[in-house]
Image (cartoon, rainbow, N blue to C red; front, side, top):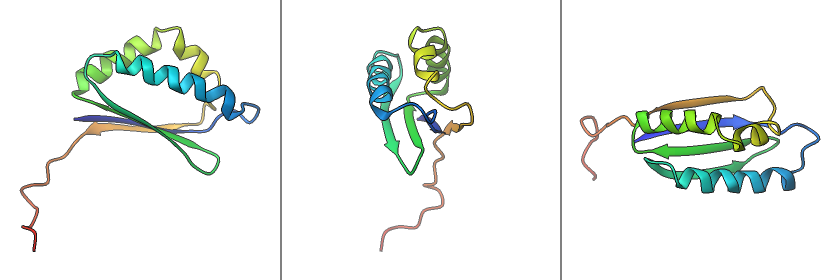
Length: 102
């Protein structure tokens, strides 16, 4: 399993009502991508976080390439402040170090 997470803020003049339909469009777009597993969008105090799970890193990278070439990318990214940060990585198996349940 591979995860991509981005924490971001909308531009100050962008209302949630302008952003949320595009976030739903992103979710619909993601569901049609090979290797897509799940998507979640979280709203915090003045910032947002989206979380995308993929079956593999190559599928995530290919979807990222397709997203950047899509007509959705510039419309969505125009609403987002450029000061955002993200994380991506693969799941780590801890089973070797886990203790049996008591």
